[in-house]
Image (spheres, rainbow, N blue to C red):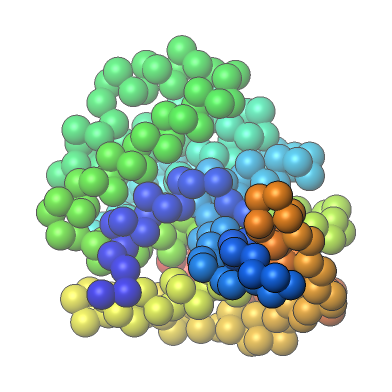
Length: 288
């Protein structure tokens, strides 16, 4: 089996690297190196928490209008809807915390707790968690740590109960809302690092589509999401990163050679605007 969704979600909490770098360990034999191992150190799918941490460096500003109102939780009537909303609210939670509006995080976490209660997973966000959030208002690291623990606990629950397909809906919601924030921030700042991050999400997109197809037989509702998600494929196919240069550095003492790949971007402004609009339309459709 290529991977399990539950185990994969834990990976989302690990540090994310936008740079591609390969470390090749070798034993020197004369002037030649004998390769004995290859370790690729980058992740394809960051969590909403990691995405917001990346955007924080670009001085992202808070806009309350971008949040999904907590009272919209009543529109999540089916199990797939509830888990999709969970992903969206988790992205909103991270956005509020990173932007310094952590008082909003309490309201958002209340919506998350309500959704979990309705899905029968009420034990993950207990009253003490909500009190801990209120106690740590203004402390970004503590609040994001709380959010990470919630995702981890939810992941364990879904794994133990073999509900991996439900995790896919949560993943789609969190990723879409996070990329929505990223694309809006790029349009405001024209920061090339953000643009690079968005374009590199092709790898995340490909993995998400793979998982959607994989679990569509168990959860047919995924097919509706899959149709909408495929509207994003043209952007990634037109704006796939191209290799600009490749450099290598060797540490003879440690016998490690690092291969760094520098990529160049060719993205039309209209394309990124259309991409952001498409994501916004998908979210509006799924959250109405």
